[in-house]
Amino acid sequence: MQNEEIMPYIAERLKLLRGLRKLSLEKIANQMGLSRKQIQNYENCNCAIPVVRLWQLANIMKVNMDFFWEGMNENNANSNDDLQLIKMFHKIKDKDVRQNIVKIIKTLAEN
Image (tube, rainbow, N blue to C red; front, side):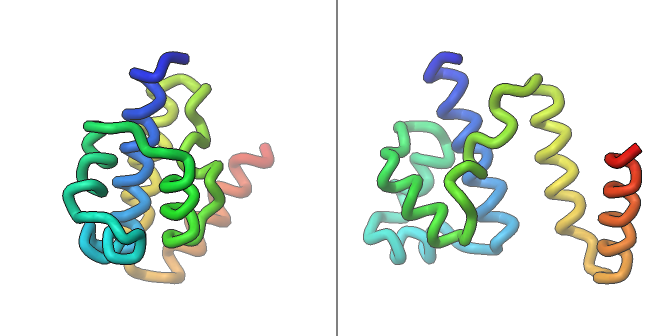
């Protein structure tokens, strides 16, 4: 896999996670001691994200660093499906509905 494929994938995962955590560019930038523009550059893939910054982002957003490249080696169509599913799932406000969806997915995955 080439850098041209890796960086956009990580940038997309960063955008997704920031949206799921409902964190503004400013809030993340302040916590990292960076400018809002720098975080935006990372998300728009205008520059590579240094490993130490990726580690900081993971800590701020309370995920393992693996989150950023999870699924990268899979087919891109599957990865996009995964991202869409996560985005839509987090739009569901009803906690009971969300729990039922998780149960259904677990049942399907086990069969």
